[in-house]
Length: 476
Image (tube, rainbow, N blue to C red):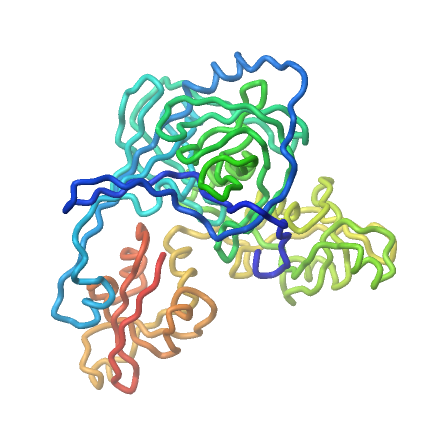
């Protein structure tokens, strides 16, 4: 929903960094160079908290450290050789093979081996290894990922594991003591303490079209390698997944950010049930209600999500919500800004009913909104159809006459092109895709099969109706 509203952007003075550590192995020189991947620079300027009082963290720490794992990943990168000049350009024929190693953390969320971590920890990994607190090591399967929340679900083959129970991130209070548990700088089972310094923080670090950013901000020390680790309360309950830090150096400099556990829990449930995340949409264009808008509209309040526009035939429009309404609550949960509204709507699935409270003409009105998926209906999205939806077009089989005239045996023609991967890559309406990553395609199922578990670059080959051959690349 990021594209249908103006999101809150914090004023920042330190770079926001995803806290996963990666190491490159130089085959030629035999050296290891450690790098910390950084997200686009943003700025934050808040005074450091000064914790006061005495709180006993021993029980919460003991209950957590045995349930936080060390995740090690490996990506084998190699050049692709071909006589085709485009392959030489796209894949960099002169590139020497090299191994990229990554390090992060994960949280065991069930005794039978399900582990929650960040998407950026395991993204593009060829191998994922999980090391438990007692140094037992397992190969992990990536069951699913959600770049929109930067979360991923892993599975290892083990039973009777210690795990951290879910808390409720809606109950988290600013000023509450918390613990961050992870493996910073490969230092296993490290625990740090701090307080919650803000909630529903949007730091604009996720560059996804439908990203949900509503981070819990804390001053618990989080460093490279902490990505995917646990944020727990003093009862030892999981309330967040540590994801990013505010820093100019790549190391802790005052503030860290965690995905709320309520968002994470919904992602896990969706992946287990459907294989992909089910995202609900309300169908409004919104912005934060601020003093300026309130003054211009003659409003007596300055908090809420102001409705700038609606999708006709969308969920909110059909329910009776109109432009100029101010959304102040969803299912009796107060909404103060766009970020809080996104977080709340993100906890639903298509087809769910949500009671939305709006302020209109200085009166509160309630509407029962049946939420939709991004296609505008209430059906659950399968993993395969979700992949096709990302392309942003219909794929149709060309006529036999068209195939004969162009001298090709099979392909899929791009129709009804809209915003998505294909348009972003420069593909025009009518392009006929003949190969995906050098494999011939005859049906949409072939495309789904090629892209379903794809991370990283994708190469499309094809031809336009005028006979022009073209190649396009984009990332998944």
